[in-house]
Length: 289
Image (cartoon, rainbow, N blue to C red; front, top):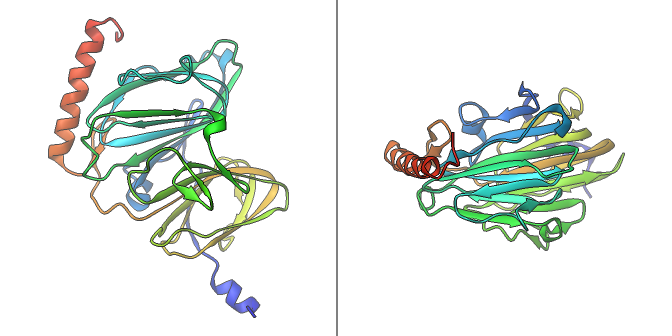
């Protein structure tokens, strides 16, 4: 029999909370120079949302190397294109779908709202790649909403939860889940062995979680859990949606460029050289200003 005292001692502490920095329709909740050092391999997280009629035309062609980006499109069909030559179904990623871009040695990509879309919402996550993949060839994967598996209230964007496993090959042991809970619903997340990194970001409603220090985690807020292997208990206050990340800690330093994160200065320079090469080709083709 488990006593109330034993339950209390198992609550996983929240060690940091933030509402990030807002830049127009984008809220930056995590970046490599701040929380990324603590939460690596998760090094960057943007929560974005905008009305298309507000003049936002998308994100433009831009480069990356040394990381993978995962865009979870909550609402609004979006046109995606990248320099691997791949794209979503007929060039469109549907709302509820996922774009995975392993930049590796270097890639450029772009996204813009599809015609007739009125609103776009989602998260973009950057994952630091291990040394074996940081200069590998770029790889893109587009998952339609029906291809994103679900276990209970959790959609598995990356990794595995229960019997549900993402079709995206995770570069290291990590999970990234999109969860929806009804008002008052309780859910316990037990991380896999070794997943000592843990965080949650709420995009709708509010959550009681961990040790509940500071009250519920609200919409637009990210909470960081202490590094441990303990389970995390969540209770929804109102209908609530959020993303959760857990992982084995990335063992390398973060060596940063403008759009890139590598494990060393030499690998960063290699990736940036490839970015310049692709950029020059895009300009020759008239695809960059």
